[in-house]
Length: 569
Image (cartoon, rainbow, N blue to C red):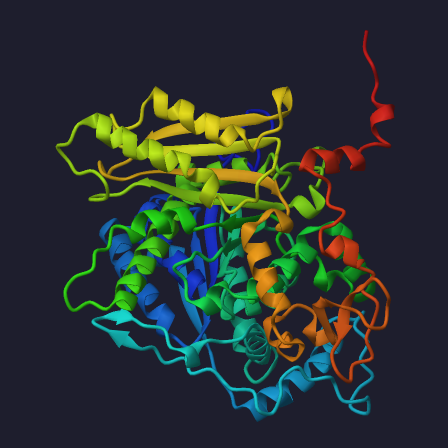
């Protein structure tokens, strides 16, 4: 029987087709994982199914591996007799213009917005010049890659600031043949041709600049534009780890999380849409997953050993590559588990995929942690043939490290958590399961207000063991990455803070800076811009008034409704 998105009579769902937009290096690497792990072609056995993927980056260096995986993926489809046209896998390489040309493009963005959105006021060619966030001396990135012994070694001149990435994307979306617009239209058209319910994941690195600079505009062009808000769109933000280069774990993490928060929290988002319309409505209709990578990094970094002649920085890059690959593969396998039904169910209690009558938003607590926590790796601490007691002792140590690298500040509480453990038969036992439950319970509300849901699955690699920990009800201020990035932001000279920003720059606003025109409000006007009142109070923006837990927030929201509940004998 073909089932609907959620079949209320049986509680079952149809298979869900997984579709991905990958932005920057982190996004392209996640598409790699979906193409590599092998489960997508299982879904494509169903003639109603399709897989649609689009990678967008500045330069094609980080998309070449994805293209190689795509070629292998198509060969596997052919070997199984699955029509190749059930998968659409494309890349978009955004051209890097000169600073002068980019300035010209940015100056015309208000004109483009005025033509596209009726509520955006633009008085035409005779109006005052648009405020430009690109300076004449802005250094344009060099997207060429540098390799040593077949390993990429990032150089400083390939880094793209968020503000420049935003400008380059908008140039490709609005000007010339509009390649970015056309790519999104083709992506949406492929979704429309799918005969099963769809989920769309938009993946990017929260650190760095390309993906985080592009996502604030591309996500709304995708969700509100070409998809018409009819398909759940889930944000996937990879948080930086200590193995990342400094520019990927710098002050831009603070501005990125601020801007995502102003999308997810309807109390902030409504203030922006009240002025500028639905084009700025939260694009992440299916929720937002923040993926910390620190525990996997800490576990895997110890796997790579220093060999004679191998420089420490090369070793570090190898370890980071292995970490990214492991997190990507583990996340991708989970997303496609049970033909996409599992991730749909996971997002349901947090209110993202449930029916409207059962949904109560968590407000500023709409981030969800998805921690791929590595607990065991081949050749680290213990090797095959040693007593099982030594294996379990090492695993126990790393279960105990979960709070250290969860990415959450001490004192965080929520109402429910999920933990899905993958282990070879015989490695995981009741003692370790009890320890895991005890460790995670520290994040739960006491008594019947807290709920922990766990599963155990057998993993194909006898030497690997990990747990996917899913924690909803998170505010940006609960994230250790947010606090660390804010300290860096506070030491950044004010004239450099525009480069760290993206959202609302086209409206002449630096969102993460307090307004100089409207006391107590956020959104500083760019030099020469008239400015406008975001009505987002600094107190709210900085998270000073966030309820202690998501339950406290929903209790406040429903306070007026509770007395109307009909009592029974």
